[in-house]
Length: 503
Image 1 (cartoon, rainbow, N blue to C red):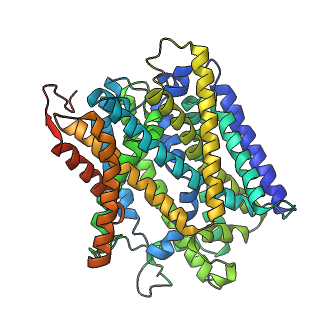
Image 2: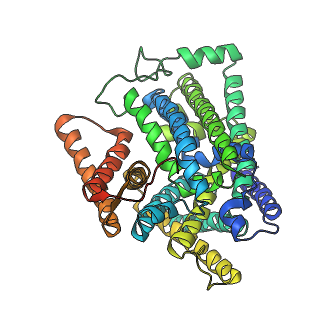
């Protein structure tokens, strides 16, 4: 059986199963189902499904491979996630539930005004569009390796594959929305985790290890590129390094707050829980599972590294960069494990991409078209407009992905990721100022502040790195948020309207 036929059958069967779930969950669906899942979703289901939504195809491939380059320096950041989830549970969720929000950016509209609301929603959309496009792009490139050569140009083939993938995403989410996404997340999380466990089993079996041998290797194996340093080393004490332990931990907490607590994609699922108590249970459970799953990916990274360098090294597998480690090893182990890998990769991609498309549509409908306040539009009209808007976002994603393919430069992809992380900084700063201060600002100035902060942050990072040799790493997000916060403080004045966390 050819690799293309294996890929086609795997993709078809898996996608059909998603459509079945979509059909089941979208029965009797309406606008409330699309935006908030009818607020009837069990918290345990949301917590488990959010694993697939929090990770992506890029994570599935990159985290294990990055162990060779950076050992376990990613682990302190994952520990920081736990602190971030606790903040979301105790500070943000009570606010969101009390205000009964469809879009979390509506909070900023109540707190500061329309410009703040739209600014936050706009920055979220830019972040999600860029992030989702890159994630899908990387996976489509992997998909194309299973397709035989033809008379169609590479650009044409990429466009066709990407368009088909986005069409499936649109079709399985266009009715049920977040209600469908939550239940398909469960399926996808299950298959993604199974793919990792089975991959580990196959590699360990190939190495003729017992499970005891495996655990010893995970904690004792040395990095082949850095003699004397264990691959499981997780503490970097170099204060100038981007992977410094303290930087990673603090960054992890703030990255989690920004990219989960202030992200419509993630919070839309939390807000589908029955009540605040259930949502908190979901958040704490998610933090524990996310930690364990990332630990699993890091362990896989060590197992892959040991296996590769025990069998001739990177050149023997045709590996030129660490992102290729997992796919290359899997493809060398036979048809069965290749199918499992493909299912895991697809499972890691559908949730984040489908969730992004749903949340982008929700945010635009609520924050820009004000569906929740438009009594002049019928339910039927709103439904037609919502489906059209979702189709437009699918087309935008396709255009961005095609541009990435035309540029065909790894540095451009890295730049897109950095740009997306910059856009979360203003979100963090604006939300923190609204929650933790009792001051008012000129709402019309907020967009200019939100644009200025990332620019100043970029300049600061360049100066520190060039002249001092100091790297902010993911702490750039915090610097960005701080600049936004300080800018708002200097143009603010005390308010008579109390806005406290206890509200």
